[in-house]
Image 1 (cartoon, each protein chain N blue to C red):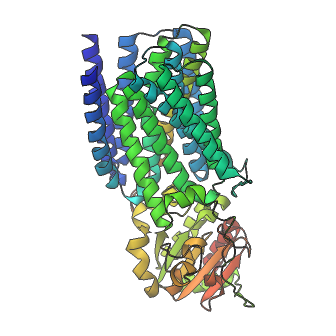
Image 2: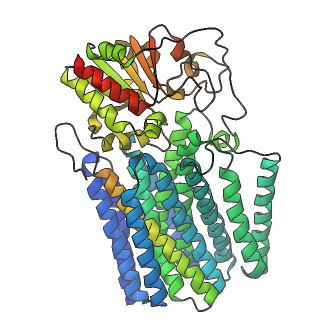
Image 3: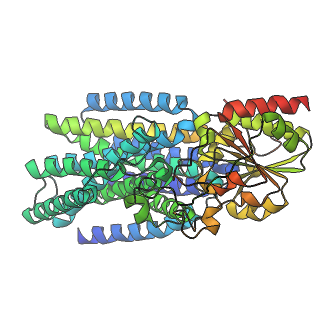
Length: 457
Length: 100
């Protein structure tokens, strides 16, 4: 009887999750979707507690209370610019929980069929890789660790060796009919180590791919846990998340025109620096006043934000400039490259925070043909995603990556911190073009000055 | 047992197809909230963590179970709250946004 009740509750949960994701198709209904999904989660948790009872109630309530308080406080305090690392962190927590469940089941010594044992090893592996990998991604994005790839000699052979040892341990454990003692501990430690090693050599700009992939991993770990516990809600929810992470990973790799293996094993931005030789050419350096005159009297302006906008936390100043331009009758739109920022859709969230309506944001395919009819493009802290070398220079490391055709606009203004190259270490032809003006300085500062000048017009 | 495993495999395979259908219809503008929302959904492992802690009988097993419940709760609560905060900021032109 009670098991029927539980199964029905899990069915309701699954329906809520699926309906929740369906509502994410439009920004107008997305918030309701998330609440529906939260309702599903609550149903599953309450039903489980009611049917299984609360064993070790003291410990359980303490863990829930502390976890909930930390979760709410950090989720409410995190600035939108730090969203990628926050999502990475919460993702890692889920992966860790899935792995620990399998460890707990193993300690309990419940099921010793080959199928259950293999699933147990798999969950520990994927869960802990996701946990450790997410923590490294968090540290990199939070700049506790350098965002540049961290490489050392024999890195790939070492990763391969760790993986082979884990594989051997898993096969041995399944053959021996047990996950216990030294096998369990070494396997768990090795999985954590592997997660650490795999993410360390990946650079900051590749994080959208890594975060999507780790999200997918945690989903799969949850699904594997579902098989282990015979819990359909976990299987369905975990699989949905696994598919979601996988699709986003594919989208991101495609947007960079690099196969996933290259992102994971390429240590991009370290090995392949400086392709184009630009020689002795000069940039045209502008003042905020020049830019205000140019943009203030234009008919159409497209703004191209990049990670520099997030670093400078300049989204509100950008919105102020856009509003001033609109008040002067200028048509202002935003062009969003799929890999601008540090997670899929990062720029959309930042601009949403600054109150930019989402129907002013256009993605690459929608807006790319409009640049040639545009008077002024303002690039804020983006570099590689507007580098014409990706389109025109077959030898360039980023050749083939779809870019925003900013260079085709009548005038381009680039807001940039300094004269250095972008993440990939590649010279950008765009900065030397005749119709390009460079406005150097911190983006927040430059945009504030630009707003002042626009008010004077 | 074998029957249950096969049923579970059915569910898994169908969920894979459904997942691909569902996710590919989410527009790029919502990809960060999508990731964050699915991130909260995989917090469903908390269900498993509750069961494991509930049946733990040795100190080590209790420690592992407690940690799993803690991490799972963090994932669920943090994931939903942060997603809701993000989605509250999305608005269309000409309408007042729900700001904090």
